[in-house]
Image (cartoon, rainbow, N blue to C red; front, side, top):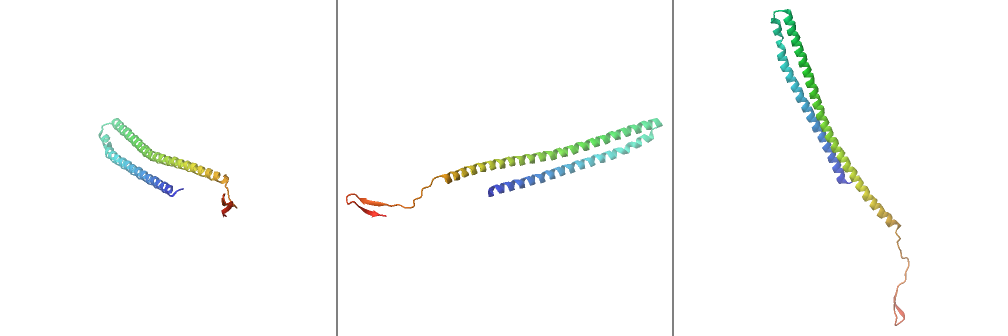
Length: 163
């Protein structure tokens, strides 16, 4: 692997770590905001729950029982509403977490595809180089071991220079 490729892979690894930390920070802050919202809603309900003293001033036991039954039913509806709100907020927190996880997964997949393409490209280059080396190895080479060389003059019929 080339030094440049190592830097690219290292940079991509750092990017994934930074994105993961950013996702965790956002999810944590979002969850904290939801928790504060639930506490605020609970404080409103505590102020409303003191209204049960209204039933004490009614004249008959039947009217008091009907009033208390109505208050209990209203409190149960409020509790069901709180539970539904809590479930919806938890689902939205997990949906945000899955959004981040999907985005990071897509980036990792794209990086994997790029690295596979780079590997394929390097393999092709290596195949071409190996083919050239093989062709050069089987090629016939001529080597001269001994030779005689002479320059002669035809008119004099004797060599002018001989090696």
